[in-house]
Length: 606
Image (cartoon, rainbow, N blue to C red):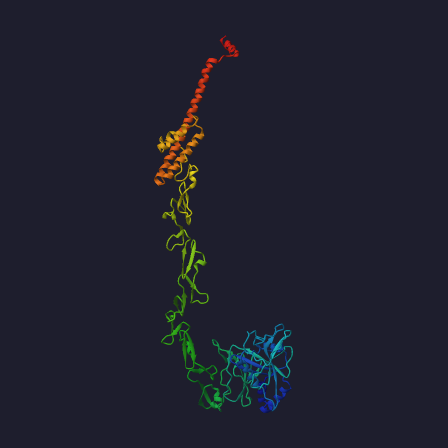
């Protein structure tokens, strides 16, 4: 495979005029050239224009075999490089229109459908790149999802307009003047060779292109230099572009100058020097550089002086022709010596970057929050309140969240143990004497009760006389004024009744009854005693007299019951004794032993 550059190189050797060469080449291109290649390098990337009738997959494989891929056009800048490549093609005769169809690295696999809302319409770059915004569709692509679809650049090569994109079936070889575009990326580049005298240079790139015209030469390329007006001088010089140790720069394997001659000195192409050529007489010369530059490894080119090689800056060193500039990282400013870096205290800025607490650090700052707050999720500089009550409730009963804190409260009937306490204690309401008679404290509340003979009023506090006490006997145990449960013997009871009149009246009732003193007698006496006591209580309702009547009345009833019981027992014992004595006396006079007893007595006497 030969490129246009190689053809020019051999045509120069054969002394073929360029006009004739272009006519022959145009004739061959019109018939259909066989894999001709043109190359263009920019920065660290090279592009090639290849001719030949291939399917999209075959073209992609040829690019991949040389270490690249079909060309991607992700920006207008890359699209302009295509125009520069096409400009290298020879122009046809007047009136001849040449149309080209060139595969690029844009395709859509079978099963992937048309996407009208996307710039690439559902297509993807062969390198797997992301969706890009640049597109140049000449017409909307087919909406079919049943076939593999690929894209070509289609149009006239010398048009000032960018070639539009046209979709096509990937398996078809493009008609007309067809070919494809490849893209290659490299780690370093060499500057093109400049000759100090007449000669010819031919470059062979790693991707197989042979050309005499390159703005930059990719790393790994070789160069062949033939000196003389027609390159007839022998031997030729072979060079290799290779990286320099401990540097990102690539240099040729042998320094220049090349094809230098005493006849020309500095007069031919400035002696090959990039900046200045110093003529030293007798055809000898030397290259020099402007201020801020120094000679490169080839002794022809000039590169900026690396003022940053001595690390003069505390931060970043930015070289430029004739000097350097120091830059400080974020959070620092340049000191007065313009080389050192000083930390910036962001917390002293007029507008504090933190909402609450700002802590300056080396080159930066950190934000903290007050107690009871935490950093906001959306912004590390803002703070938000911590809801302590929503976490593990710190209070016994009620928790109320506040800004930056919380406080506890208690239910009705309870109070906090202390001012800042979280525990609740029961309030003893009975200490405030809320009830009229008695108060019973409960957890969180209290209950009132009344003495015997009284009932609790509807308000739950006051006591009212029990209306049922006039028809029923008083309780015998329990209550503050009830009769004790243990009844003492009659000998221990008081001798006197509570009231002489009550005693006399009760005595008349007892004496009027049968001498046997049946239980009904005692019951009648007790009922009379209750009636008399109730009448006297009604006449005198004062508290102190009523209390005295209750005490004396209870003692009198006990005494009366004991006395009556003892009197009944005594009468029964005396009656029994009298009956026994009467029987014994009668027996002494009327009893006669029967015969059995007589016989027994006579026997005993015998």
